[in-house]
Image (tube, rainbow, N blue to C red; front, side):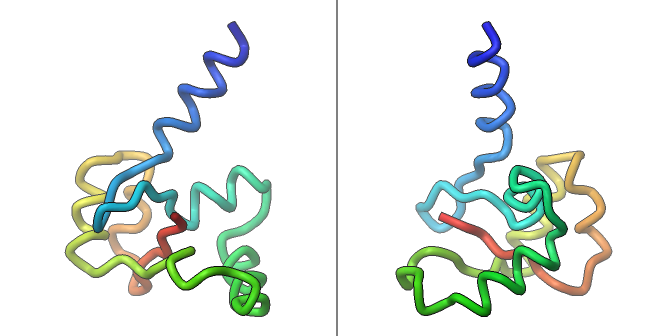
Length: 87
């Protein structure tokens, strides 16, 4: 029963953009129990370790679509920075 609950929570964090199943930086940071800013810093410092299609930045339109479809990400609505999407 516990595994089912965990799986359901993860599934709600997965979205599809540009043909990829992705997680946004805020959700990934929450899974790693760190701040989004710290996650982004670590990724940028170690970018050579990841394949090219590992992540991309959402466009303004994609961010708006994400915020419209997911209430828990409403804080992104007024952010001047578009979130990173991790494949």
